[in-house]
Image (cartoon, rainbow, N blue to C red; front, side, top):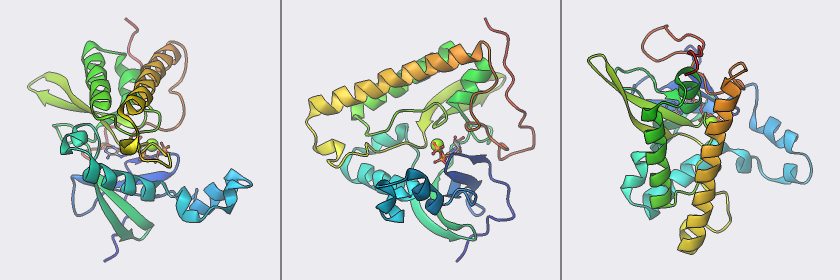
Amino acid sequence: MTLRLGGQQPFARGGNRLCFIDPGEPARCVKVRRPDFTLEDVRRKKGFPKNLKPLSSFDDSLEEYQVIRSFQQHYPDGIFDHVSRCYGFVDTDMGRGLVSELIRDSDGRISITLKQYVWERGYSEDCQRAVQQLCEHWLRYCVPSRDLLVHNVVVQRDYQESEEAIRRLVVIDGLGSGNLVPMHWQPLWLQRSKTQRKVDNFHHRIETLLETRKHEQFPGEHGLLYHNGVDDSVAPPSKEEQS
Ligand SMILES: Nc1ncnc2c1ncn2[C@@H]1O[C@H](COP(=O)(O)OP(=O)(O)OP(=O)(O)O)[C@@H](O)[C@H]1O
Ligand SMILES: [Mg+2]
Protein backbone atom coordinates (compact mmCIF):
# COMPACT_ATOMS: atom_id res chain seq x y z
CA MET A 1 0.00 0.00 0.00
CA THR A 2 1.26 3.50 -0.81
CA LEU A 3 0.95 6.02 1.98
CA ARG A 4 -0.41 9.40 0.88
CA LEU A 5 1.68 12.26 2.25
CA GLY A 6 1.46 14.71 -0.64
CA GLY A 7 -1.70 16.46 0.61
CA GLN A 8 -0.34 16.90 4.13
CA GLN A 9 1.89 19.65 5.48
CA PRO A 10 5.18 18.31 6.88
CA PHE A 11 5.73 19.25 10.52
CA ALA A 12 9.42 19.88 9.97
CA ARG A 13 12.23 19.84 7.47
CA GLY A 14 15.92 19.11 7.86
CA GLY A 15 18.75 19.58 5.40
CA ASN A 16 17.84 16.30 3.74
CA ARG A 17 14.38 15.15 4.72
CA LEU A 18 10.78 16.24 5.15
CA CYS A 19 9.01 14.91 8.24
CA PHE A 20 5.30 14.05 8.23
CA ILE A 21 2.97 12.66 10.87
CA ASP A 22 2.14 9.07 9.91
CA PRO A 23 -1.48 9.38 8.67
CA GLY A 24 -2.44 6.04 10.21
CA GLU A 25 -0.44 6.24 13.44
CA PRO A 26 -0.13 9.56 15.32
CA ALA A 27 2.71 8.21 17.50
CA ARG A 28 4.90 7.76 14.44
CA CYS A 29 6.43 10.00 11.81
CA VAL A 30 7.47 9.31 8.23
CA LYS A 31 10.63 10.88 6.82
CA VAL A 32 11.08 11.23 3.08
CA ARG A 33 13.77 12.79 0.93
CA ARG A 34 13.24 16.44 0.16
CA PRO A 35 12.00 16.59 -3.46
CA ASP A 36 14.07 19.78 -3.90
CA PHE A 37 17.25 18.02 -2.75
CA THR A 38 17.38 14.50 -4.14
CA LEU A 39 20.03 11.84 -3.59
CA GLU A 40 21.34 12.67 -7.08
CA ASP A 41 21.73 16.30 -5.96
CA VAL A 42 23.64 15.19 -2.84
CA ARG A 43 25.96 13.02 -4.91
CA ARG A 44 26.54 15.77 -7.48
CA LYS A 45 27.42 18.23 -4.72
CA LYS A 46 30.12 15.90 -3.35
CA GLY A 47 32.38 16.17 -6.40
CA PHE A 48 35.11 13.76 -7.47
CA PRO A 49 35.93 11.08 -6.25
CA LYS A 50 33.02 10.77 -3.77
CA ASN A 51 30.51 11.16 -6.61
CA LEU A 52 31.59 7.73 -7.89
CA LYS A 53 29.95 6.04 -4.91
CA PRO A 54 26.52 4.40 -5.33
CA LEU A 55 23.44 6.51 -4.61
CA SER A 56 22.51 4.33 -1.64
CA SER A 57 25.68 5.43 0.18
CA PHE A 58 24.22 8.96 0.42
CA ASP A 59 20.88 7.79 1.79
CA ASP A 60 20.55 9.09 5.38
CA SER A 61 17.37 7.15 6.04
CA LEU A 62 18.94 3.86 4.98
CA GLU A 63 21.91 4.51 7.23
CA GLU A 64 19.66 5.50 10.13
CA TYR A 65 17.66 2.32 9.71
CA GLN A 66 20.81 0.17 9.70
CA VAL A 67 22.21 1.98 12.74
CA ILE A 68 18.99 1.55 14.73
CA ARG A 69 18.88 -2.14 13.80
CA SER A 70 22.42 -2.53 15.06
CA PHE A 71 21.38 -0.80 18.34
CA GLN A 72 18.57 -3.35 18.66
CA GLN A 73 20.97 -6.23 18.07
CA HIS A 74 24.04 -5.15 20.02
CA TYR A 75 22.89 -2.84 22.83
CA PRO A 76 20.46 -3.14 25.76
CA ASP A 77 16.97 -1.75 25.07
CA GLY A 78 17.69 1.05 27.56
CA ILE A 79 19.67 2.79 24.80
CA PHE A 80 16.27 3.91 23.42
CA ASP A 81 15.53 5.95 26.55
CA HIS A 82 17.16 8.86 24.70
CA VAL A 83 17.11 7.70 21.05
CA SER A 84 14.00 7.64 18.85
CA ARG A 85 12.93 4.18 17.73
CA CYS A 86 12.69 3.25 14.10
CA TYR A 87 10.17 0.89 12.48
CA GLY A 88 11.39 0.38 8.92
CA PHE A 89 10.33 1.65 5.51
CA VAL A 90 7.00 2.32 3.80
CA ASP A 91 6.16 3.26 0.23
CA THR A 92 4.72 6.75 -0.01
CA ASP A 93 3.63 9.04 -2.83
CA MET A 94 6.85 10.97 -2.11
CA GLY A 95 9.16 7.98 -2.40
CA ARG A 96 10.36 5.59 0.23
CA GLY A 97 9.69 6.78 3.78
CA LEU A 98 11.39 5.85 7.03
CA VAL A 99 8.95 5.34 9.90
CA SER A 100 10.15 6.51 13.33
CA GLU A 101 8.82 7.10 16.81
CA LEU A 102 7.35 10.63 16.85
CA ILE A 103 8.34 12.42 20.03
CA ARG A 104 5.42 14.37 21.49
CA ASP A 105 4.93 16.26 24.75
CA SER A 106 2.37 15.06 27.28
CA ASP A 107 -0.22 17.46 25.78
CA GLY A 108 0.17 15.86 22.35
CA ARG A 109 2.20 18.64 20.75
CA ILE A 110 5.25 17.55 18.81
CA SER A 111 8.34 18.17 20.92
CA ILE A 112 10.47 21.12 19.87
CA THR A 113 14.21 20.91 19.23
CA LEU A 114 16.79 21.76 21.88
CA LYS A 115 17.82 24.58 19.57
CA GLN A 116 14.36 26.14 19.68
CA TYR A 117 13.97 25.48 23.42
CA VAL A 118 17.25 27.16 24.35
CA TRP A 119 16.55 30.00 21.94
CA GLU A 120 13.19 30.71 23.50
CA ARG A 121 13.92 29.93 27.15
CA GLY A 122 17.64 30.19 27.64
CA TYR A 123 19.48 27.43 29.42
CA SER A 124 17.08 26.77 32.29
CA GLU A 125 18.10 24.63 35.26
CA ASP A 126 15.62 22.03 34.10
CA CYS A 127 17.29 21.98 30.71
CA GLN A 128 20.80 21.79 32.17
CA ARG A 129 19.71 18.78 34.19
CA ALA A 130 18.21 17.14 31.08
CA VAL A 131 21.41 17.78 29.10
CA GLN A 132 23.45 16.27 31.93
CA GLN A 133 21.19 13.21 31.90
CA LEU A 134 21.58 12.81 28.13
CA CYS A 135 25.37 13.09 28.39
CA GLU A 136 25.51 10.48 31.16
CA HIS A 137 23.36 8.20 29.01
CA TRP A 138 25.67 8.71 26.02
CA LEU A 139 28.69 7.80 28.14
CA ARG A 140 26.99 4.86 29.85
CA TYR A 141 26.10 3.16 26.55
CA CYS A 142 28.91 4.69 24.48
CA VAL A 143 26.21 5.47 21.92
CA PRO A 144 27.78 5.65 18.45
CA SER A 145 26.88 9.04 16.99
CA ARG A 146 28.02 11.94 14.91
CA ASP A 147 28.33 15.28 16.67
CA LEU A 148 25.20 15.90 18.73
CA LEU A 149 23.58 18.88 16.98
CA VAL A 150 21.08 21.06 18.82
CA HIS A 151 18.53 20.67 16.00
CA ASN A 152 18.83 16.87 16.13
CA VAL A 153 17.84 16.66 19.80
CA VAL A 154 14.23 17.22 20.86
CA VAL A 155 12.95 18.24 24.30
CA GLN A 156 10.04 16.12 25.49
CA ARG A 157 8.01 17.96 28.11
CA ASP A 158 5.38 16.96 30.65
CA TYR A 159 2.61 19.33 31.65
CA GLN A 160 0.86 18.82 34.95
CA GLU A 161 -1.70 21.43 35.97
CA SER A 162 0.22 24.64 35.27
CA GLU A 163 3.64 23.06 35.83
CA GLU A 164 5.97 22.22 32.97
CA ALA A 165 8.95 19.91 33.30
CA ILE A 166 11.34 18.28 30.86
CA ARG A 167 10.84 14.52 30.82
CA ARG A 168 13.84 13.71 28.65
CA LEU A 169 15.90 14.75 25.66
CA VAL A 170 15.69 12.46 22.64
CA VAL A 171 18.23 12.28 19.80
CA ILE A 172 16.30 11.93 16.53
CA ASP A 173 19.08 12.11 13.93
CA GLY A 174 22.86 11.84 13.53
CA LEU A 175 23.24 8.36 14.98
CA GLY A 176 25.97 5.88 14.08
CA SER A 177 29.70 6.48 14.15
CA GLY A 178 30.24 6.32 10.39
CA ASN A 179 33.37 4.20 11.03
CA LEU A 180 34.21 1.07 9.08
CA VAL A 181 34.77 -0.80 12.34
CA PRO A 182 31.51 -0.70 14.36
CA MET A 183 31.85 1.11 17.67
CA HIS A 184 30.82 -1.97 19.70
CA TRP A 185 33.83 -3.89 18.34
CA GLN A 186 36.28 -1.23 19.44
CA PRO A 187 38.06 -1.39 22.82
CA LEU A 188 36.05 0.17 25.62
CA TRP A 189 38.66 2.84 26.39
CA LEU A 190 38.46 4.03 22.77
CA GLN A 191 34.65 4.02 22.76
CA ARG A 192 34.69 6.05 25.96
CA SER A 193 37.16 8.62 24.74
CA LYS A 194 35.25 9.05 21.45
CA THR A 195 31.97 9.45 23.32
CA GLN A 196 33.52 11.93 25.74
CA ARG A 197 34.55 14.04 22.75
CA LYS A 198 30.94 14.03 21.48
CA VAL A 199 29.72 15.10 24.91
CA ASP A 200 32.29 17.91 25.15
CA ASN A 201 31.39 19.04 21.66
CA PHE A 202 27.67 19.03 22.57
CA HIS A 203 28.28 21.34 25.56
CA HIS A 204 30.33 23.57 23.31
CA ARG A 205 27.50 23.78 20.75
CA ILE A 206 25.02 24.78 23.45
CA GLU A 207 27.42 27.51 24.62
CA THR A 208 27.75 28.76 21.04
CA LEU A 209 23.95 28.88 20.70
CA LEU A 210 23.71 30.86 23.94
CA GLU A 211 26.35 33.25 22.63
CA THR A 212 24.47 33.69 19.33
CA ARG A 213 21.24 34.22 21.24
CA LYS A 214 22.61 37.41 22.75
CA HIS A 215 22.62 39.30 19.48
CA GLU A 216 21.28 37.49 16.45
CA GLN A 217 18.30 36.02 14.62
CA PHE A 218 17.46 32.35 15.05
CA PRO A 219 20.53 30.71 13.48
CA GLY A 220 20.09 28.62 10.35
CA GLU A 221 16.83 27.43 8.88
CA HIS A 222 16.53 24.04 10.58
CA GLY A 223 15.30 23.18 14.03
CA LEU A 224 11.89 24.90 13.89
CA LEU A 225 8.56 23.16 13.57
CA TYR A 226 6.07 24.12 10.82
CA HIS A 227 3.21 22.96 12.99
CA ASN A 228 2.84 21.16 16.31
CA GLY A 229 0.58 18.29 15.25
CA VAL A 230 -2.31 19.57 17.38
CA ASP A 231 -3.26 23.10 16.30
CA ASP A 232 -1.97 26.00 14.20
CA SER A 233 -0.45 27.92 17.07
CA VAL A 234 3.20 27.56 16.12
CA ALA A 235 4.74 31.00 16.17
CA PRO A 236 8.25 31.92 15.13
CA PRO A 237 10.49 31.60 18.18
CA SER A 238 10.64 34.67 20.32
CA LYS A 239 13.56 35.43 22.55
CA GLU A 240 12.65 36.04 26.16
CA GLU A 241 14.43 38.73 28.11
CA GLN A 242 17.97 37.67 28.96
CA SER A 243 18.32 36.97 32.64
N1 LIG B 1 11.17 11.48 15.73
C1 LIG B 1 10.95 12.80 15.78
N2 LIG B 1 10.17 13.33 16.74
C2 LIG B 1 9.96 14.69 16.79
N3 LIG B 1 10.48 15.55 15.91
C3 LIG B 1 11.26 15.08 14.94
C4 LIG B 1 11.54 13.67 14.81
N4 LIG B 1 12.34 13.48 13.74
C5 LIG B 1 12.55 14.70 13.22
N5 LIG B 1 11.92 15.67 13.92
C6 LIG B 1 11.93 17.13 13.60
O1 LIG B 1 12.21 17.26 12.22
C7 LIG B 1 13.43 17.99 12.00
C8 LIG B 1 14.17 17.40 10.80
O2 LIG B 1 14.34 16.00 10.97
P1 LIG B 1 15.71 15.24 10.67
O3 LIG B 1 16.78 15.81 11.54
O4 LIG B 1 15.46 13.79 10.77
O5 LIG B 1 15.97 15.68 9.14
P2 LIG B 1 17.34 15.66 8.32
O6 LIG B 1 17.04 16.26 7.00
O7 LIG B 1 17.92 14.31 8.36
O8 LIG B 1 18.26 16.65 9.20
P3 LIG B 1 19.76 17.18 8.92
O9 LIG B 1 19.61 18.61 8.47
O10 LIG B 1 20.36 17.14 10.32
O11 LIG B 1 20.41 16.26 7.95
C9 LIG B 1 14.16 17.89 13.33
O12 LIG B 1 15.03 19.01 13.52
C10 LIG B 1 13.03 17.87 14.34
O13 LIG B 1 12.54 19.17 14.59
MG1 LIG C 1 18.56 16.46 11.36
